[in-house]
Image (cartoon, rainbow, N blue to C red; front, side, top):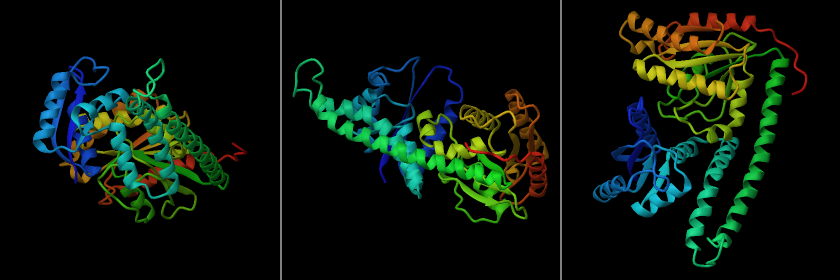
Length: 378
């Protein structure tokens, strides 16, 4: 196991940075790193070339030497020049939040389509870095305008671009097939209910409880990368879909790369928004807003979309007052999203089976209101 030092640049008075740092540490551990320290710099604006100031970099170098650090994990998304300079100045491998997320994806990917999407996300980030680092190595080869190692990086980058183009074509084919299957299910009368939410909110546990499936469950992030489908128990026409979990500050480029998974959210008839009721109120608020903003950004919150909120893990709360407090908090947040009363909040425990009967009744009631239309083409 490699030793890792976590570093973060935050703005003065930045809200919730402690939660973000705590989660980044959790992601680092999930990726298999032994976190030996954390370094925070408070700064109004990042340094263009290094992100951190020189004094903070010297502090980072000292910790790296004293604690035998193998990799520097940076919360912030790094530009290629920042990543390169930090690696040159610290002498260790540097990964930002984007890189770390992809490492976890690689560990959890089990199907070919997920691996293709991960590779696309990796290459799109890798190309500018390769251009920069190869230019540095070949700078002395051609000391004229545009010399900067162009001959060194051109073939490698051209190969990556060809690979990227090929991957995009393959992904597009898979995406078209995914949409075709979605429409085919709707033509057969299925109502599609997509389980979404923050990672570790209990999405897969809820999926298993409602379908009698036994899909792998973990408290680690991104256990589910490819969507899973199964009928609601005792129902012939309600199809449940378990999808990838979201995380705060997830890079838009990664979301774009996983376009295939997003189609399930976009074309679903019902969104089952799974929220961890056991979170502290501040963190619950952040996570709920994060998920809602993601759903809006990807076009999943259409005007006719029904929403059922599973306020999960109530078995971890002390009493009904705590449950009601969190229910009110979630309702207050959702009211700001102009949902026209299309959401219902049901407190449950998917793990303990608490209040699942009421949840299923509400789910079936929402499904009964959906007009199943014949869809021609896409």
